[in-house]
Amino acid sequence: MESYEIRSERVGEGIWRITTIEKGETLFEALWKTDGVTYNAYLVETSEGWVLVEGAPEGATEPFLEEISRITDLKDIRYVILDHLEPDHSGALKELLKRLPDVTVFLSSTGSKLFDIPRSRGVSNGESISIGERSFTFFHVPWVHWPETMFTLVEDVLFTGDILGSFGIHSNPQEDGYFYDLVKYTASVLMEYKPFLLKALQKIEELSPRIVAPAHGPIIKGKEIGEVINRLKEVIENPKGLVVLASSMYGRSWKLAEEISKNEDAKLINILDEAVSDVLSWMLTARKITVVFPTYDGDVFPPMKYVLELAAKKHLLEGKEVLLVNTYLWGPVGEKAKEIVEKGKPAKVEIRNVKSSLI
Ligand code: FEO
Image (cartoon, rainbow, N blue to C red; front, side, top):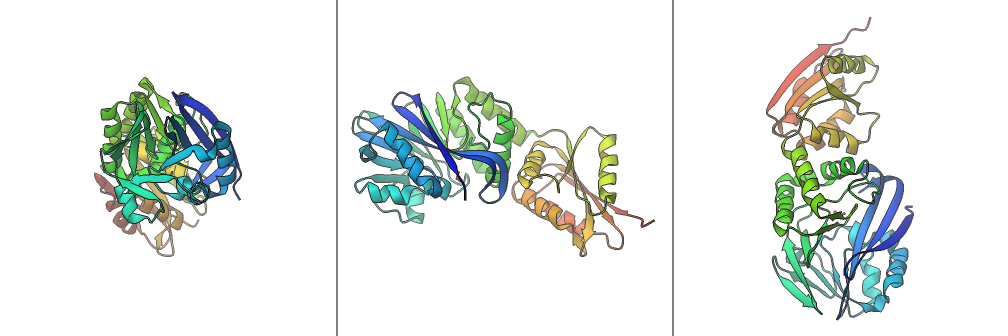
C-alpha cells in the first residue's frame, strides 16, 4: 500500500499547487521503477469560485482533500478540469463528486465520448471558458499518451498534464538528476507516441507561457521552459553515443560485452541489474545500440527480448545503428532478435552470432 505526503504552495497569482508525493522506490504504472514520484494538482481562485485542475491517485484522496481545505473550503470548488483521465490524476474524482454535488467537470470532447463522468462537459480544441474574471482556454494535444489529452491555459500559466512531467521528487528543473528523471519519464511513458509528443512540445513553444505546470515533477518557469524543451528535443531527435546493453546467464556474455565496451567510448549496462525504465532512458539517448544476449529456449534471452520489444514500440530504435551480439552454445538466434528490432525502424541492424566454448 502506497503512503503519500501532501504539500501545497502558491505558484502564481491566485494559483496554488497541491503535490501528492509518493516517496522512496516506486513502481509507477506498476511498471516503471523510480525513486519517488509526484502528482500535481492546481487550485485556481476566481471571483466565481475555485477551479481544481488535475487531481490525485485514489489512495491519496483523504489527505488530498484535507490539503485543499487548508487553502479553501472544499465547497468553494465549482469546477474541476482534467487534462487527462488516467487514474493517477482522476482517482480522487469519485469522492470529490460525492462531496460536491454542484461541481462541473471539464474534460476534452474526446474524453467525454470515452468516459461517462457525471456532471461533466467536453471542451473542444481552442475553446475558451470564462469563470469570473479568468479565462480558461483548452488545447487538444491527443495521444500523449492517452487519446484525450489536452492543455489548459490560464493567462500565462499552461497546465500540461503528463507532458514535461518527470519522475523523482525535485523542487525545480535546476536540481541534480531532474533532467535524467524527465528523460526517464518520457522514455517510459510517452515515447510510444513520439510524433504526438513532438507536436505537443511545439504547441507549448507556440503558446509561450511564463509557467509550465505539469501533472508530475516541478513547475518550469521563464527561460527554463525553452531550455528544457530544447534539451529534451535534442535527446529525442539527435541522440548521441553508444550504449552496450548486456545480459548474461553464466558470465560469458558479460565478458564479451565488457570487451566490446572497452574498445569504444560506450556506456555499458547490465540490464539484469537495472530497472527497465533506466534501460529505456539510456536507449533513448544513444545513437548506436549494441545488444549482447545469450540464447534461451531457442529464443532471445527473455529479459532482453522484453527490452527490445518495448524499445521497438517506443521509437527508441528508430533511425539508429543496432548491433545484435548473440552468444550461444548450440543455437544462434540473432535473426529472431533482428525481427523484433526491425519493427522499430532502425537505420541499420547487424548480427554477430558468437559460439561460446564450454572449456
Ligand atoms: Fe500521469 Fe498518464 O497519467
